[in-house]
Amino acid sequence: MAKSKEIDMLGGSIGDKTLKFALPLAATGILQQLFNAADIAVVGRWVGKEAMAAVGSNAPLINLIISLFIGISIGANVVIASLTGQGDEGQVSKAVHTALTVSFLSGVGLALVCEVFAEPILGLMSIPENVFDMSLLYFRVYLLGLPVILLYDFASAIFRSRGNTRTPLICLTVSGIINVLLNLFFVIAVGMTVNGVALATAISNLVSSALLIFFLAREQGAVHFSFKRLGIDKRLFFRMISIGLPAGLQGMVFSLSNLVLQSAVNRLGENVMAGSAAAFNIEIFCYYVINAFGQACTTFIGQNYGAGKPDRCKRVLRITILQDLIFTVAIAMLILLCGRVLLRLFNSDPDVIEVGMTRLKFILTAEFLNVVIEILSGYMRGFGFSLVPALVCMIGICGVRITWMYTVFMSRRSFSTLMTAYPLSWAVTALVLIGAFIYVDRKKLAWFYGRKQM
Image 1 (cartoon, rainbow, N blue to C red):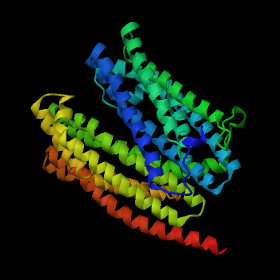
Image 2 (cartoon, rainbow, N blue to C red):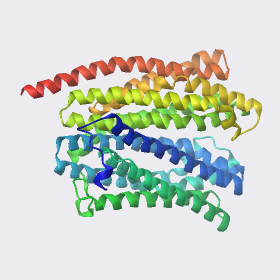
Image 3 (spheres, rainbow, N blue to C red):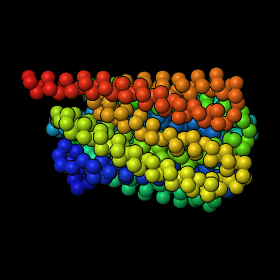
Image 4 (cartoon, rainbow, N blue to C red):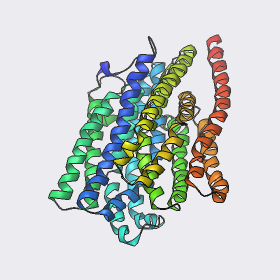
């Protein structure tokens, strides 16, 4: 990993550096979404709608699994960033090798367990009989790549902890192109079905994780990778878990709450299902931008907290929330202006487009609240306070949405009533998080100045 690609988070200007960090990270998420869509497009075009449904039916379950470990990788990011700020290269090296070892072993163990229980797990998802066999085949082949998928997530976290978001983006771009080409090769040339796109996904993830490990092995500093140093430092492992596990569980609970809301969408008919799905695939690009600045805040705070720079932490907070708001509002307005055109790419039915526009208006006009949630959560995670924002978000967002669905929506069953749950849950959570932020901020400032007087 070239030094020129790393960002000095501890000195100099901040705004240009947070942009340099966040924008490639947002592009990474958007590209990942586009490459995932390629899987569905290929099987839908050359295999059939049953195969398309089989791949799509796995998405909620796979997101549930991956969300947990993406959260834990955030813990690795914070720990390595904090140790980097402290200048403790020995501990940074141990943390790097601990993170990589844990990710691969977890992936192997989880893949084995899911392979054994794949059929009963999918059986809980009410998948139609004509789709179930292909869905099971896709899931089992996909699991072959789980160890390298988790390895990529954790290796990316290591790069982010040093301020380098360009290298993971480059690796993902290369592997994504390979994924698309292999999709076409396995399905069209070889004649495979859903197992072809699942195998292509596994191979492309192997490529991306191998590239990241290759670049880490070329690094001469504290994050240099060596097979001889692989192992688990218990103290650092539990520190990563204490920060990352709440974030991972938060992601899993979000996925579950969204599944509950999706079940309500399914009750409103095919047009609502189609319009809502199309809008989701458009609005999610806005979320990747919001999340990227949240991770920028976490990483910059982690390093400056480790280096004992409270004033710089405050500047990071102000700058990232302002940048996030500007980019998010701009993208949201652009999507709303082009909403009908974008929705027609998915379906030309006027009723479907109207439903999609309804969802886009509810979600995108309230995304500024999501900015507050992501940035304040990222700020607190940077200090190691991961449990606080996780609990607030789980109760505020998930609790409000599920309560709303089983009370107000049940008495007034309309799509607009259901969509109201999103801005309402964000507003409640943002208000509570602001209070939690004030508490954490005062506590950490007292720690900073207390340490200086020692």
